[in-house]
Image (cartoon, rainbow, N blue to C red; front, side):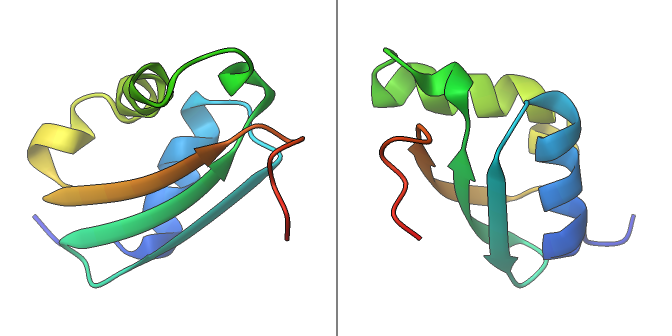
Length: 79
């Protein structure tokens, strides 16, 4: 199985979670994502990360080795 690109990981996240902004960097195995979604409103960081893992589903076990992320609400995001 080919390693996913940052663009593919971004698309996976965006397909499973309504986002206003998703940016992903990485090398095919280790990724860092900045994810902005109104769904994070009122959630602690752990629940936000769990929401992203849910959006990625089995890809977290099969394709993506490591994902670090910054999860923000639209009000918290400062471009």
